[in-house]
Image (cartoon, rainbow, N blue to C red; front, side, top):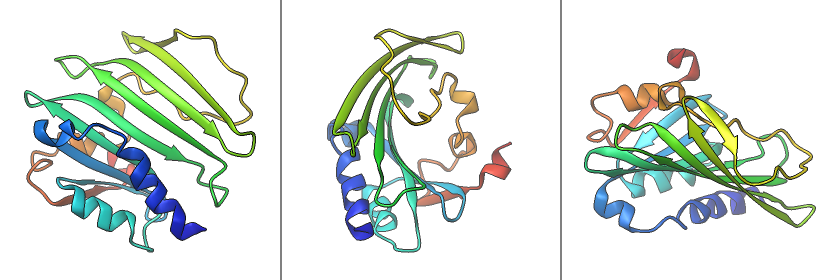
Length: 176
């Protein structure tokens, strides 16, 4: 079942329109086994890492660029504890021209309950406001990111070689 999870993750993130490639994209993964975030400037390198049995990608993502600025961030976050995963969260963040996070559309899927829930947050001045009613869920949801400067992979974003390097990795201890 573990072998099936990685292709599902890879497929799930690519519900993102292929226009991301025309504008420019950076592909991310959080390797929970090595405790690091990695970025890839091409989909092939990213997919190869997702299929590497030594890597446990609990979070995958795509940063989409428009006019040399990040315009959207898409993430698929899975349950790190239970294998196969009991839940998946799909986050779609919108950023303004200053790369400030302004909105989050979140879809949560709980497999055992066959339940799918959507949430939308408005984000302003570092605060997230739930626009739609909060559903009752039985697990700790991932944190809503409200500031691009505090993202767990921010050292990757600050690296001048982000777009030109095939692969870059940073550990969370380095990003504090």
